[in-house]
Amino acid sequence: MSRTVTVGISDLNVVKAPDVLVTYALGSCVGICLYDPVSKVAGLSHIMLPASGAIPSADLKAAHKFADTAIPLLIKKMEENGARRIRMKAKIAGGAQMFGATSSAAINNIGQRNVQAVKAALMGLHIPIIAEDCGKNYGRTQFFYSEDGTMRIKSATKGEWTF
Amino acid sequence: MAFNNYEDLSDIHLDVLREIGNIGSGNAATSLSSMLDRPINIDVPKVRILDYNQVVEALGGPENMIVGLLLMLSGEVEGMIMFLLEQNFAKMTLSALLGENYEEFMDEEGEMGNSAMKEIGNIMAAAYVNAISTMSGMAINISTPDICTDMCGAIVNAPAVHYANISDKIIFIENKMSSDEEHSNSYVLMIPDVESLEKIMTNLGIEI
Image (cartoon, rainbow over all chains, first blue to last red):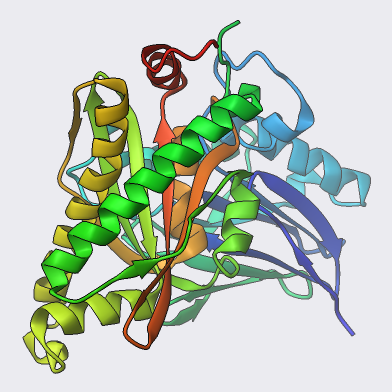
């Protein structure tokens, strides 16, 4: 029997086969799935914002909020569970624009900026992105299966896909 | 003392926000009632300061479908205001506005329905903003609303992200409205910038 582990917003978690990770209702947030196929260790991080920048509080909860700080923490936690960075592959989803263009510049591009920040962070760590389902204008629930590294995306009205 | 985030609010400040919520909800019910041409009753609203995850739980879990309307505040108060309407509230208001067969008016994009919902969002936002404006004597503008129907977790993302750098807390107002036999909940997220919140309190003569 596999367990299903929920990852909240600004949260991350790691499981081993056959467990499943899930994060619900990604809007402009991005869910980053990392997988080491040899150790079958899977990690999922749900980030809200691109960069920690000048945020003074370096507490762990805040670090999980940002692409640039959360991804290294996720990798560290996976390595503690027997994964190796050199074998990791990434699948990412989210970064939607939920509301139209009329409101505010500050929230308009946040999804897109999150995706860019995630890609830059992964590239810097030499982790290839092998699948992505990002952008557009709807929410996504993301499942990640540690058995084989499959990512399943479920939307409320647009359907379901596997990657 | 200055506010750094919503957690710095004292009981007195919360009472003021509750009162703004009360007046706003009363105004909103009155406007809605005249727009829909039917009596709308409203219970005393519950005003709470919740963090993001609690808001999502209060809305029935992250995957619960909800209609979200987002408006920006500018002028003497900066920030945003978000209405979250349960789907049956949306149906109730749409059928009152467009008739029982309102679905016939909706094209594939739901343009007619969306436009009607935006108008309701506009009127309700104005009701709350008027409450602040009248009490504090401050001039506040509201933008036209943006609408989105989706999982509530994804919708609440928008204000949560905007204020993630400041606070995880949001002012959450829960309204129970009823019309004839129908009951429905609507929710308001008031998210003034902390500086604006200070100005509101100062203008009301309340010590920060």
